[in-house]
Image 1 (cartoon, one colour):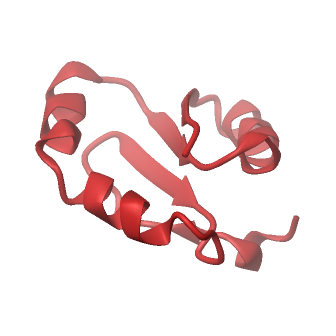
Image 2 (cartoon, rainbow, N blue to C red):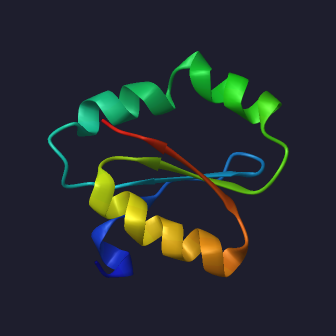
Length: 78
């Protein structure tokens, strides 16, 4: 998977969100990004963290990036 196959949303403090813009679940992901859950995550996570919103393939790809960047990773399977 090349970098241009997924979208990185705007960073929110220490959080960076990754999701595939081609997914059938895009509306659900957008709804999640606009929800109050993000605010709770922002206040509870104080270290650099990559949040993956998608499936296994995207998670594995971002896990490689997280390892290189020494970031934590949180996966949410949509």
